[in-house]
Image (cartoon, rainbow, N blue to C red; front, top):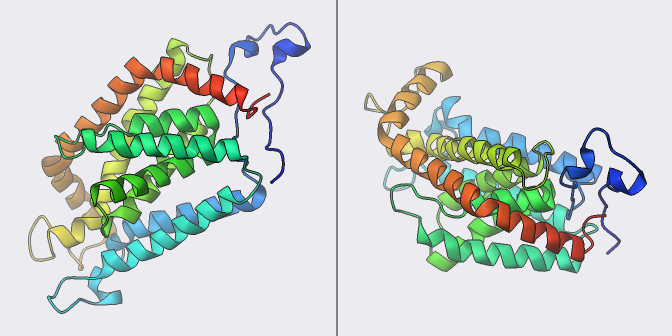
Length: 288
């Protein structure tokens, strides 16, 4: 293992900073994103987007067929593909220039997330782990956020025996929630602007997470013979409109519950936890 990439030295270290950049939180990259890792992430994002939306483009049963009961095996096949892709990205990110302190912090936060998540899952859409993934990505960088999102969902699925075809979809979606948090623009550390930024991101990410998962399984939940189901003869936009109406009726409460929970936890616990995580990053020499 080699030394991790360091964030640029604070402007205050070299003199006055009229622009106020010295107050901004340092860019920490606990998991460096080398060019090869970035290419892998982009490829994973494209494959993931295709896996979530391909039922809108083709007849879900036309490619991989049905099992003996007549149920489509497409979600299982695509879930395996996503799991392989997620595994390749995890190996790529964790095998290069990652300190043992980074792996230790990743393990601790993923373990906490696996314990916290069951506290809210299944109760009105409450999701108590998203705020931790967002804070981890914000404090330690985009690569760390990706790993934290995927590993937290994987660990919690093992703890709660929630392993199923949906798990790879959840892992990939949560991984990109963490990745996006690490890519948010810099703000003054611990300021109201940063809390507002994280809250807004958490709200949007919570809805996007719900929409993507619901879209991936929509053709198989409602079938193709009802007005609420997928229509193989219709175009993608017509199916997307149908999905939007059906999802608003059936899942708006769940998505809203997840978003509100995330925003409240980020607002109440975010500033304090971010301070602790950033102090840990400085002591672990993640940052300059």
